[in-house]
Structures are given as structure tokens and as C-alpha cells.
Image 1 (cartoon, rainbow over the protein chains, first blue to last red):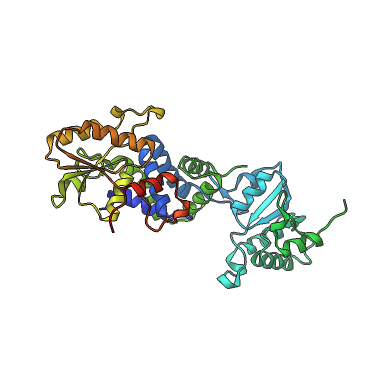
Image 2: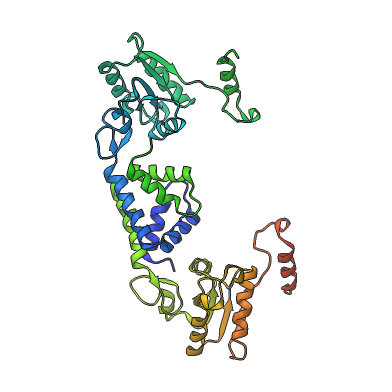
Length: 199
Length: 199
């Protein structure tokens, strides 16, 4: 004995999502079953809309809907001479939420990782370089994770931009605000020391 | 700056599901966006199918699809004279997975709870009594949670069935298999002692 066919199918779909196991998937299926028909229709439609309507910005690879160019690239109030290079749209949103950056972005869609077979040509580095050649860019801010892959990618991009006159910077490594120092690794401590500033 | 409109809509839908917060909903939206169009279509369709195709069994309130009577009630190989009373379809499935019961079920769809304003007439107790009057029932097994609500509901049903000649039993309370006794509450220990059997 199992659940009805449609229920099992939805269960399988939920289980393909990250972090959703058997028990959780069951709970979500029951929630869908108990939701109103309107709510279920909205859910069902929005899944298809996300797949069919969202595309990538022709300039920066951010997500965009109803237009070829994303809202940020289209916003003339922003500083188009400063590009912040991020790994993913998720990271871009994090920066936007911080309200600390008024330039434009470039989404790499990955990081160089020889171990996983991800080479420079597999991510959007060429697109970044072409963009820098075409547009009037003053500064490229590398805002990648402080991991081996992130550091490698930052180094690779900065080498490519050597001698172009574009200023290449990297966001600061250090102690996260409100973090308990007790739980930080030695490398973070080391970076925080190296990057110390006068008070 | 926010995500594109469709993305935000799907985010809202995920956030209405139990146990899914902002961060998790984001992660699930990205997963949908990165899934194949086929997979997204399957997901989208199965949500609507669950809402439109699944109905309740006319006899026991279990879920059923393509028929008015569920697979269990329809199965002549099962013992139709023994009814196991459960709170929800979720519990029914748990019993089915255990393979320990070959009778039929009755799903109450809730438990009596004066605090939450759930009275006997709000759950499927009348339907159970009518069923017992009409069918040839030998035993009713009460398989409800060992909570105040479960105990109240069990007591209520057993009172209603007094003098009908139907044997009313309750599943055993005791120590869960493989549980560490250290973490059990006194009431469970007490019930386990009361229900002790000869070795």
C-alpha cells in the first residue's frame, strides 16, 4: 500500500529538491493537499513561470523577466563604471540587500575549480573581459568566496586585467560582524590581522 | 532590488509550506530554476493533480484516486471485521508500512480537543459508529496518540461502543524499540510498567 498515484508523484518531485528528505516531502505533500485550490494553482503556475519567463541579462547574467537587460543594468542612476564580480545571482541579491553597492554586477555562474573540471572558459570570464574592453570601466571589485576556488578565480581575473588600466580590488577578508571569535579558523584570524586598519 | 516577479511569486508559495523559511525557500526556487523544463512541468502538474484528483474514501476517509473507495477498503484479501481507528492518513500509512495489520481502517481526521474547539461531531466519529452498525465488525482497535486529545477520543469512542458487543482495544503504550530509556518521561515508564507481560 502506498499513497495515491498523484501523491506519490508530487512526493518524488519534492524529494528531488535540495535538503528535502522522505519525511519532509510527505509533510509538504500534505500541506499542498490541504491548501486551497487557488493556492495550489498559484504554486503550480509559478513553477512554470519561473522556468519559462526568467532569462539571463545580456550584459551581466543576472536574472531578468520581460526584458533582455536586467533592472540593475537598465538603471541609469547606478554607477556603470564599477563592476562587482560575484559567483551567483544569490550573491548578487545579498549585496543588493546590504544596500552598500551602487555600481553594476557581473555574475560568473561558477568558480574555477580544476578538481571539479570547471575551467576559466566554463564560467563567464570571457564575457567580463569583453565587457571591460567595450565599456568605460574604472574599477572591478572581486567579491568571491574566500575559498580555494574563489581565490583562484580572483587571481585569474586580476592577471587578465593587468595593464588594462582598470583598478582591480577584492572585498576585505576578516572577522564577520557579531561573530564569536572563538569559532573562527586560523586563516580568518590571519587575514583579519593582515587587513588591519588604523582606528 | 528584488528577484524577478515569477521568482518572488514562487518564493511566496514555498514560504507558505510548513518548515520552509526565507533562506530555504530561496534555495528551493533556485533548484526549480535550475531543473529541466520537463522536471518543472512534472512538478507543476503533480501539484494540480494532487489537488484535483485525490478524494476521500467513502468508507474510511483514506485518500483515494480514480475510485470512490480506497484500495484498502476495496481489497477483499483484508479482514473487514477489524477496524483500526487512526487520527490521519499519515498515521494510516505508518501502520501500512509496518505490515503488522491486515484489517481495515477508519480515519478520524482529527482528535477531540475542547481547548481547540474540536468536538466529537467535528471529526469522523459518527461515520465510524454508523459503519459499525451497518457492517459485521468484531474488533475496533484504537490507535491514537498517547496525548490528552488521543486519550479523550479513545475514551469517548469506547463509551459509545459499550454494550454493542464489539470488542474495543487500544494499542500498547510503552517504551519505543531502540529508544534510550534515559530520555523517556515518567508517564511512559509508568505505562510500560502497567502493561508489562510475562517473558
